[in-house]
Length: 484
View (cartoon, rainbow, N blue to C red):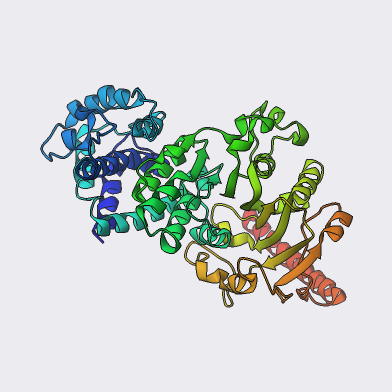
């Protein structure tokens, strides 16, 4: 594939540059460059198809006017242009205040972006390689979109950047079960690189979008926030690749920085799909925005926010760790609140290896609907395919691995669910009696047979005696050697 070859050769060029250190910087550098190329290709198409359309980027800084000539500026002159003119101009774009102002998209992307490259000659080589991709060619854009997904996957090995990536099989399954439609407001309050958004767009395009009016309604219903600069930039670029003309709905902000009570009724949403960061702590003061659930634990705060943000009959699919299920204190109050305000109808329990290699933690997919209290919760235990010990980088989870759960689900109304070796039902009263501990193991699972305890103890004693014998022999050999 020419796109894959092109991007690989770009990365090889960047590895020669002393200023670019590691995968995270390399991907960040790649993204702002590709962003400028993608938005310029999109601008040129819009200029032909839409009367009076003007690019959000001043003419001198449009990709076509400084980057497309392979013999154009290079060396120190190119570095000076990028660092001293291009970046300041894009960071300081004046907004028009009009709806759909693409200047906001550009300014937000470059707000905290940085040119890491120190060699103007190598930067020119990178720019020339990027010019080989035509983002108005649907086939090339599709191939690049597939490779872009792989780039996002590569963030797993880019230090802390790995926290931004949710396996695409998981996002696709969650979106499929939530079934968003054009016209509904869909929100991801911790959107990372935009995996849930891109899955939602693909889902709606495949099932519901047939007219320009439906496409407009789909785009108008998308909402997202991302706190960190790199995933925000990746997400905006991801939206452009999916044909979204105005990705300004992806805000660079901290959703938790607002007091919970300040979210008004007109900001309520139909759908939330998200994988909030877990294991992290928010900065001092954030917990004061959540007086009823005063905690610094990020996942807990997001769960409280999601319950608040859903409209009546709104629905949500959220990734949460095992710790939320069995946790006490604030977590208990939060789970009680969730079950009072919403129908927590399904919890899909995932094996620890789903998020490997950068995290080995038990995770769960919680599905709930706002408006009626929980009466029963169905649990479904997702298992690694037969013949495979765990998911891994070479054998990751795939959407077809969820087919058993999809077949069991019972359609939109969740009709005809039955207990199986992987599925069981628990009443709200049982959960309450457990102190709202939702860490409920599969009652149908056969406990592992670890053998007879007396036999195991005898084998342990025998092994320890054998170890002691070897240790004594080793001591004798060393003493003899030292005596010579």
